[in-house]
Image (cartoon, rainbow, N blue to C red; front, side):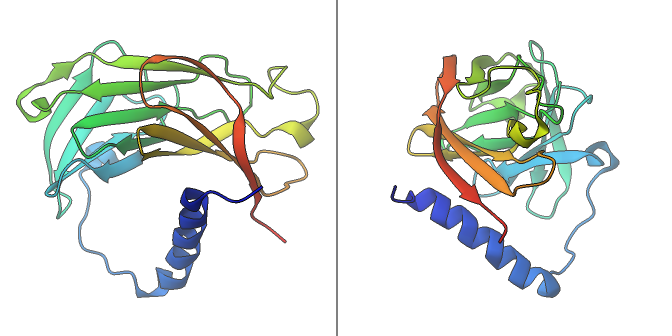
Length: 201
């Protein structure tokens, strides 16, 4: 199977980040409200949007390009079970991945969709949602830990679709990540892996 370009790009950026790690320069110190930051993306050319990890408030935090927090928005109909990442479409829509699944037992995975170009003028909003399940997961958790492939910590937007990249929790660790692609609109989707990559020798 030919590897999709987006996966090639993902792996290339991952490798490049490792190469460039020694030349990183600290440019800002984030507000203490973001001490468990998990998702970060550009909302527009001058604003970043972020959220915290599991167990925190269902909040979006807006920062300038120097990392200064200047606005917060609460999603009133959402709950932060295990928010791991977010993605934006460049047109004002934010997709929040409640996809963390360390123990491979969750059956309530979802993506929250926030579409409101006036977010910077609001304190609270409601979200639509995408309900998710994996077609290749039959038990919660799988009895054999060699099958624990259903945790995810990366979410991307590309050409009107969302993509989840899973994180292997297998024992022994097998280094496999799977890519699941689905429509970037509210609904209920059973996902089939579009590609599988092994990230170790």
